Length: 330
Ligand SMILES: COc1ccc(CN)cc1O
Image (cartoon, rainbow, N blue to C red; front, side):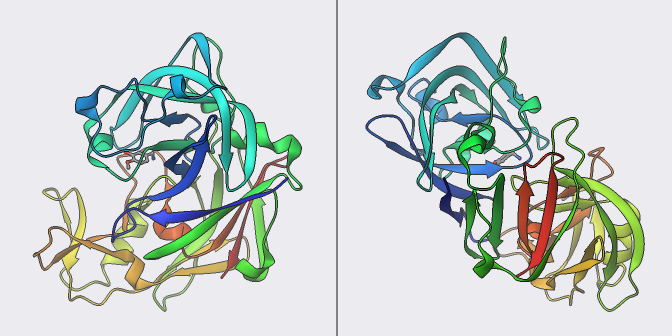
């Protein structure tokens, strides 16, 4: 089997991408954020208090003839940005882009944090990290990819995220029309459950490539790129008027400043993030101060290769044994 679905930016600065999925019988369509940085599939639901729902589509298990309560099971998740949700669990038929998993664990939210309530065009998440990270208890549940894997033509899914445009996620095949040249693969450390791998180094603008193993996670559910402070300060040293603002919680600069590109290495291959991707957003609609798409990871305890980096490549998440991740130019 295979599947293919759109990855649609939810706002004008690509803060997150959503993908149409169907749940239940008859199918209920929700727009979910496919997130390789977590492993819970949770949705706004008929059980979510109405004062926490603001325009989202909801999953109503009672309206599905194929839903089953996973009795006695609950879940609760906290993300790196402090947002979170919790609830109960059903199994139901679940499809992404024509690929169906029968009896997928669908985690129905009983509570969501305010940032999810405010994100009106995001109806939940599909965790595509390793199932070891799933928070359902007393028995943890499998991700959509782990459930689909035995039926896939190839044990892979790919991410083709785009800057200010709709991209795609494919399951079970690698579409050679979506990239150029070769795919460069590198090893994945699947413990504790992220798609953890190393960059082989980086360069700023036309500067020399700095060879250096930089371990981090490729995370489609994180907007920006978070790297060690030394690398980030080297980058913003090239930006007129840049400063690390306590007030704004990161590097900001005059929107009129010229930004260099940022290149990262995967083994011997090189991927360049255009300056436009790093000129992320104005700090407020009328401001002339802009917030960078490259920020320091010092507060996180982990480096994160988020959407600003991933949208510069075609990315293959390979569930082979051992798992690996591949990057290609597009
Ligand atoms: C839109 O909000 C979110 C989306 C995805 C995650 C998981 N990385 C956390 C969020 O707060």
